[in-house]
Image (tube, rainbow, N blue to C red; front, top):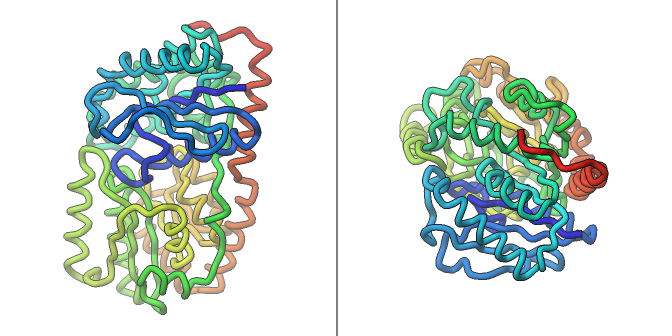
Amino acid sequence: MRIAMISYHTSPLAQPGVGDGGGMNVYVRQLATALARLGIHCDVYTRADSKDDVGSVRVEPGFEVHFIESGPKRDLPKERLLQYVRHFTDGVLRHIFTERNGHVDLVHANYWLSGIAGHTIKHELNVPLFTSFHTLEKAKKIGRESPDDGYDSTVRIWHEQRVMGCSDAILASCGPEAEWITRLYNVDPFQIRVVPLGVDRAFFAPGDQKMARSAIGLPRDDKIVLSVGRVQPLKGFLLGAKAVERVLEEMDVHFVLVGGPSGPEGEDELARLRAMSRRGTLKGRMHFFAPQPHEILSSFYRASDVVLVPSRTESFGLVALEASATAKPIVASAVGGLTTLVKDGRSGHLVRDRSVEGFAAKISGVLAHSDRGEAMGRNAYHHTRGFTWSNSAKYLLEILEDRQSNELVLCG
């Protein structure tokens, strides 16, 4: 069996947390790896955005990444990528017909831009199209003051709706995301299947906190609150910093942020955070780190006392899963997939009003009672033990086997 995975706007080989690289990079790479280890050949197609992106890279047996030239070979903002989708699609089809003799059993598109390409490829090859959207514009709009990217919201929604209408299966990462798709886009629930994400447990596992702190140069004895992700307003790190500032009125604590700016407001958001770190109680207690590879990022989780995820919206919440795998309590917004990953009061706390006071109170509650925090961490670890990439790959194959007996969905 051969799967063509489309990851147009970002490569699975790119460092998560840099530019547009995030949880989707992890998802595509880890899922392709797990499928390859089950004997399924995965060809991942991505846009060449550097002069070094030439030809193909064999990641491991059964998993190859193919760089397709489409537009300038440099990093481009997402709002410029829509114009090159057709060129990219033609390049993918050319590779499939030339190098694979047209043999593909499934097209799996990731994100709405990839979905546009996947829609065309499905009809050219007459094979099923599975689509993972990762984020949904109608969900991201809720509570937003300005766009998260440079696209006109109505344009993106139109394309999302069109791709959904042609997808043979829409893959949601959790129940809440499936509900969003059904409610916001009026999609038949039968068309949606849940494929939970996994975590690389070779890296993300419990370990010695003091050794982790020494390894990355963090204070050995003070309390540490950790946030991880792309720096942009959607992730709520400014809210998180204000909450930690409030906690500092009660106890010594350090706020550690791992991630880089992303999107049109990323640089401004990072500048605001750095300005906060230079004044008041946060001065000298806020630490910025560039995005880290998994083998190092896992040490940051182990070094922390609580992991803070104050996002405005999250389809899944991979950071919360990674934190759980390292047995850390989580304080998170009560949104999307975070509501399934965090058991409120048992593995951490969910904050429903997303207020400074709400987050500060929950953070303080965990930090002031170390025994309670450790118990929550253990609960988090046990609650998420079933989240593995191997299971994710098996779920996907079960859906494919189920759908193979059905006729392909016709465009609505």
